[in-house]
Image 1: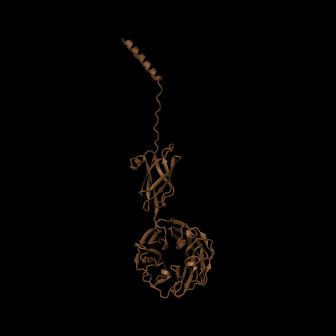
Image 2 (image 1 turned 60 degrees about the horizontal axis):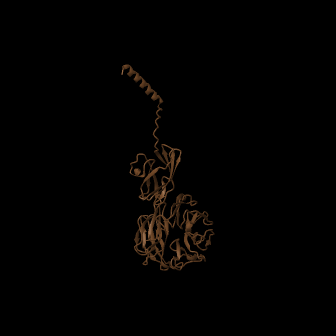
Image 3 (image 1 turned 60 degrees about the vertical axis):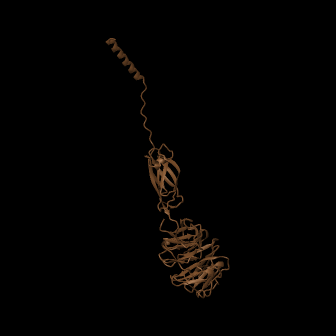
Length: 448
């Protein structure tokens, strides 16, 4: 082929190729990679640092999860690491709100720790196992904490295989206390109730039901068939009164005693019986008794001449002349009433069945019913300075007041280490003791 022919062919091909390029469609623009949703932060809106009961579910926990993309509203995957081996954590709902995810969850802690905690991991991409073994690269976490309420604690058991029921507890002073019961001997503490030691019984049959002190040294102990032993040395030794005559005939027919001194003693009991002795129990004046079937359960005093008693079916009576005459107080309750406590000569309380609580501000002239927060029978009430007080129920409930008993808040639920307390004593603002069958229980109010 001649040189001219080759040049002409090259020109034709070049024109052809150029024309083909002009007719091809334009190349498409490059599509950006999709945004991968990631967790960029977790905020606890509510539910952190709750007061918790072991084994009970906490209130709803609400979290706000920040994300880097808002278009995807599918649920996030989660994994928890907890301080309790059998903790239960359940996410109830996940709802998108703007660019965030609002999560509501329940937590039920089983940890024995006073400060249980869980660590919650959240991810939009990883699986449960990837989060569990920390191989997930795109997850975030938050720690949720609680404060665990401590239950009632048993610090002494009198049971030795026989029949042992603890019946009454009294503290002589800050350190010395004493417990009596059936088959239990006399149990004493000298360190404020930290340790208790069993001693010899009041008498050989080893049964005692009530111990009532006047001052630090003198006390009456009620035994079988309503007879009495006395101590004049703070419970170190006991002796039986030779001239004692039971104020009411029958085993355990007296339910409460008040010792004004060694000779002047009051007693209340079954069938509305009220009795007073001024010679140490040799003779009794029963003129103040009521002809009723009601059982009188408690007896207290404000001064030497004014006393109150309470009992079954909403019964309250008062004397203002040292027991010469008693007058029933009208109240609109049918609950059995168990415990009387006066802050001073004006403000007083009577607690009873089903958490019933009555309050007076005029020395018992009138009583009004108020809410105690308790559901079981109230068995102990005590106040301290600045209107601060507690009450205890037989189910182990504890309620607290900070306004002289106008309002009460339950701070301990029932059946949480205690279920059937027969007697309780609020020793001080930090410690409560209770008797349950053969055990001495305690509750530490200084802890959450």
